[in-house]
Image (cartoon, rainbow, N blue to C red):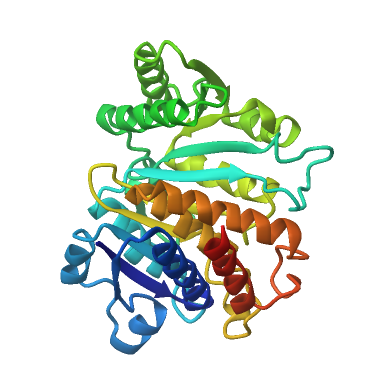
Length: 352
């Protein structure tokens, strides 16, 4: 029995979560596991109604679940960053979800904007540190609103935080058993304090994995090679800030935000899974948004819970639907409605 917290969230979040749960139900019936869902209404509507973002007791409850399934956070009537910091970052930091795991995988039949690149070329994983760096919020503002204003935002990096992230990346490469390579993405020639810590830690941990190649690339070079030669990468490990940037680039080369999923993971605790495309409020309640990213998030959740057969089946079902049925990954151009895409994937799991 798995206890799963569900946060449908804002905009199109509830729509895509509904389809992910439809597929989860199909997988549970096919592979004989049980689960119990508890829904939370954290998001913009709750804030506008009550003035409450994420109550302390709610946060404590979330930490006791096996997994958290999130739709999207972001409401056009709320101040920018309020919900994202108050819900997403708070959950990540308070529950110590120190790994942000982002597969970048191009499925057959999905259009890739890169010339002459196919599924064999775009298949890597980004391991992003998720609880340190600039996102800690250390710093401040002096003389705000004046010509003499000073704003400081500090990058906080600890040996513990860096090492556990790097180690997770090497373990991921070992489990993938594909190229057996981990690339550190940093900027050691300019950020000489923080990224010296990253580089030293990276190569020290690498000594414990003699069968895995340790590679390095500056962040600007990483962006360049992700576009020119994505096949060079197997596992990329990087800082919170750089990871935030390169994973959106990764989403584009795998077919767009409609198909990209991510996990926020504490390997010793709970984990939260979400589509990365945001709440897309302009498509709310139109039944046209692509739910594949949310379904892929469910697939990642199943893998994290140890339901490997179910996770593999869901991925095969996703590949079948996107490669043989859907016309596009873009909202309103899929050839099917949101709910119909969910039906197709659920049916494919049932007959897999």
